Length: 114
Length: 111
Image 1 (cartoon, rainbow over the protein chains, first blue to last red):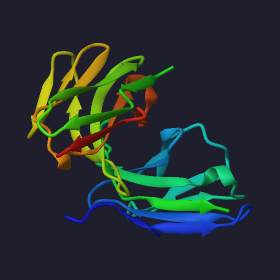
Image 2: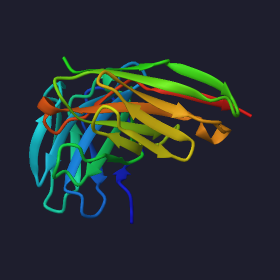
Image 3: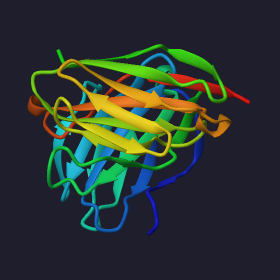
Image 4: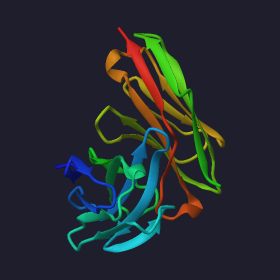
C-alpha cells in the first residue's frame, strides 16, 4: 500500500512570493492534516480536512490556506511568503472517522524562503 | 490550554543501556495519546496509541505506558538503529480533529 506522498520535496522561494504544496493521502484515507515543523516550535497544527470540508484550523495567519479535492488529495497554499515561513511542511492522512485515528505522515516539503 | 511537554530534550545511551522518555500532558480531556518516531529527513512514523490510565503497549524494544498525567516510553537494551527523535502527541476531547505534539526527545544510541 502506497504511503502519503508530498510534492515537491524541496522548494526555494523569495519573500513576497506564494507557494502551493501538494499531498496525496493513503488510499481510503479521507482525512488530511497539515503541520509546520521548525526546530524552535516543533510540530504546529495548520488545518485538517475531511471529505473536502475543513474541520479544524490552527493559529496561523490567513496567508496559510488549504483545500481538499473529491479524491482526498489536498493542497496547501502560502501567500506573501515571509522569512519565518521557512520550515518543513508535513502532511498526514488518517481514516478520520474518529478523533483518535493515528496519523500517517509523508516525508514533507522543505520550504526555504530567501 | 492543552499542552504536551517531553523530557529530556536529548538522551545519549550506550547500546544495551535501558532508559525511559517522559511525556507529561495537560488537556481538558484525553481521547488518545500517541507516540511517533521521526528519523532525520523523514516524516513521523506512528508507534502506539494509548487511551486510558494503566494501559501499556509493546513493540520490540519499546514499551509505552500511560498514567493520568504522563506517559513513558521505555527502551530496553537499545540498539544504534533506535536512534531517532521520539514524539509524544495528544488528542484532546475538546480539540476537534487536531493533534497536539510535544517538542520531542532526540535519542542517540552509541555502539
